Amino acid sequence: MPKPKKKRQPDLSRALNAVRRMVRGLRSAAEAVERELNISAAQLFVLRELGQVPDQSVKDLAAVTMTTHSTVSQVVGQLITKGLVTRTPDPTDGRRAVLRLTRPGASLVKRSKRVIQTDLIEGFDTLGKSDQQALANGLEKWLDASGLARTPPQMLFDKPLLEKRGSRPGGRSRARPS
Image 1 (cartoon, rainbow, N blue to C red):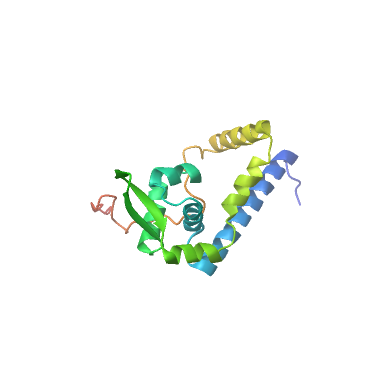
Image 2 (tube, rainbow, N blue to C red):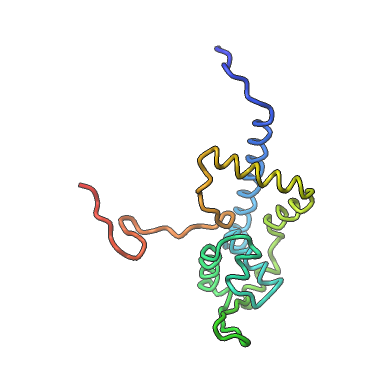
């Protein structure tokens, strides 16, 4: 058997194994949530945040979940459709809508386990400030060098809405190539 031409660096191996462990842990946790509660891990994360601090807006939730307004809005829409969250006008500011858990939503949160996103956030918080900055900077540089820097960040294991085949956003049909 031919020997490999280039020996890989031990740091590369450590980094890839760390990413593999993280992805595996995230996937396993997401599958458990879906199996046990019939919702996505992203939906559970939003529900738990609303359970801790009710009457948040989508903007508030985007800040606490560290994602975009549109991503949280999509997840909240799914939760409203499932009857787990309500959206009502803010009694103190009619221009703002607030979100609350419904009884089924609160019941689901009570029987749920801790979400992995909380473990990751709390684990990150145990790092010193310089380690936090080095990790964030290193990951961003790695993604940039790998051609993934422009991949939009979304909530962990949120299920994107699939478009119908042959259609485009906004409802316009796309002509099929002949």
